[in-house]
Amino acid sequence: MVHTAAITMAAEAATALPDGSDGISPWWIAGMILLLLLMSACFSGSETALTAVSRAKLRRLADQGSASAQRAIDLTDDGETLIGAILIGNNLVNILAASLATSLAITLFGESGVAIATLVMTVLVMIFAEVLPKTYAFTNAESTSLFAAKPLAILVKVTYPVVLAVQAIVRFTLGLFGVRLEKGTRVLSRDAHDEIRGAIDLHHSEGGVVKSDRDRLVGALDLVHREVSEVMMHRRNIVTLNAEENPAALVEAVVESPYTRIPLWRDDPENIVGVIHAKDVLRAFDARIRADGTIDLENFDVASLAVKPWFVPDTTTLSDQLKAFLSRKRHFALVVDEYGALQGLITLEDILEEIVGDISDEHDIDADGVTREADGSYLVDGTVTIRDLNRYFDWNLPDDEATTVAGLVIHEAQAIPFEGQSFVFHDHRFDIVRRVKHQITTIRVKPTRRAA
Image 1 (tube, rainbow, N blue to C red):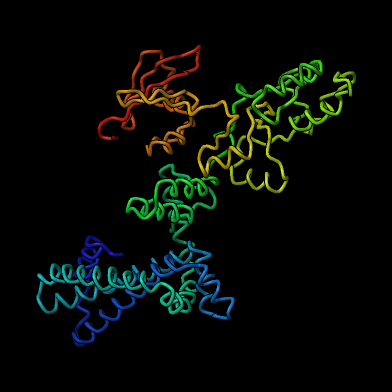
Image 2 (image 1 turned 135 degrees about the vertical axis):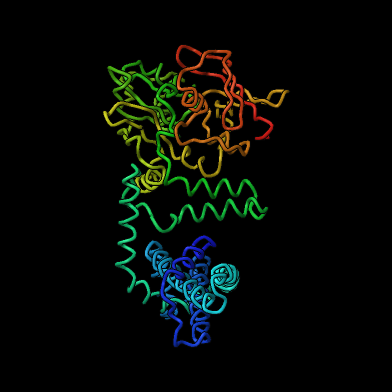
């Protein structure tokens, strides 16, 4: 899309050129301008159509033998190159049309032709090269995509070297200002996940998608961007058992534990040697009950029932970990850092909760960690995740630099606050209610009027 400023620059550039209309009929120039505007409309409409069209429909048509549908699929598979080619073509024809219009206007109206050409071209480009074709393409995405697929495929091949050069120039220029783009980062188009998330948020704001559905859809999309370290149970809260304990004590601990899978350690709590399942322990225990009701616990080795522990890096994405859980048919993994030190544990349920929200049953002992106060504030446990707060109350607290609400306060304060201190940031007030040693355990959070 060419904005008014861009058209003005093109117009001013045209005034510096010799009058190219000598010997050329103004009608020919006007016809060329209209042709360029038509090409601009085709570029704009094609981009909108290929973005809005259902890939499922295209796939069905391709399976039925439609060559145009297959071309459209191939084009959308490489959205970066496609958007780059369309941008190059669209800007080229728009700027050329603006230059010709300025030259024609100067010939007809003199120096005042610059202002006239700028005004007229702005209106023409906005209505006939942007709004109108995009509206039509959005409502007729499938037919427009099939019609535009072949010309765009040719355009992509022709402009491919130029697109690569543009990408290289952009990366180099950003590098001069200290901005380093990671490998695979899109330069000319948005990531598909961002496109989908933006569409979901838009429909939610317009009332087309309810909050619970939006949370589940966005939660599924976010799995690829979140790491297991963000949702794991910290090692401080893990229930573990000493494999050297006597069998009776181990069985009693398994029965009293709210968890079905419990890590076993030997010699040192960091040395996890296995994971026992409560069902396996209770089944073996039941088999040792004698007919007279007594229990034979002699030589009952609980550790022999344990399965080999599975360790995963704390930097593993939730998407990859979910795939690993499904492929291994496992529900439980221990999380370690780059040095191999135990950091926590992650379960399949933890990942599913990122999609569907909190999954509670009658055996859960962990409450929300949030208590509503009469004044509209909330008493929040420091370990409650920012993501959960945002999900519960539809807040927008950032979770880029911290996972828990206590971590967010420490990050913003650049220190570990003391009890009684208060902070206001991100449209919320945070009062430190309780601190134990270096850990913030309870925080009162209250949205400000602007946030509310």
